[in-house]
Image 1 (cartoon, helix red, strand yellow):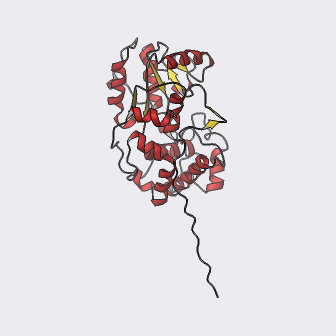
Image 2 (tube, rainbow, N blue to C red; image 1 turned 180 degrees about the horizontal axis):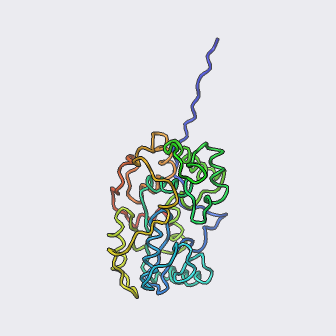
Length: 299
């Protein structure tokens, strides 16, 4: 009797586009862009990359006090693209490149872990799960655990995270069972929308060297209120949402997980100087070349 062979489908690693185009037109405007009311600086938010702390610093630099609450909820005191009245002000400034513009990035391995514990396992500040039926959908279709109804029960974090990563890949590659969420879509995609619509970054800082990078930003701009970075607290809004990570970063990534990371975030690793081959290597291993970032993401 002839034996049946085992066929293995090898799917090549592909580089996902940094930004999605709708028809023939790129995404218009400057989504995720914040600007101080004094127009001292423009900041492109990248989720899970110290955005709460940066937003509070910008708010403080204009008003001499921090916003009372999560800075993402602020509807005044800071220009945001999500605020209708702020859009023409932001667009005029960015297209004229009138203010110092920057953003902040993070090691993709630690960023995706943070997204998992905050958005999938955590209870959000409104007392509910993130995006309503998102977590039940991932539990049902991918068999992950999230620590029970309150997110405080013990569960196999490593196994659940690896299944979540399959879900992330599916949302980004096939946009099923849903569109990719901003908290796990590639950093290069967020960074790109600012460039393709006419902006240019003066600096890209990293969370791993946050004080150093933020200090350089503040030294290059004039703010109504002087900011002492040594006295600025860290506004880690997501820290209280989810369960504590129990293992080192590298323990969450086996061979398959690292393959998926390469498939999804290769461009992030390359452009922002992180080690794609070693999840335990938290710190950047190369400088960021701003000209390369603009050339590769501005197409």
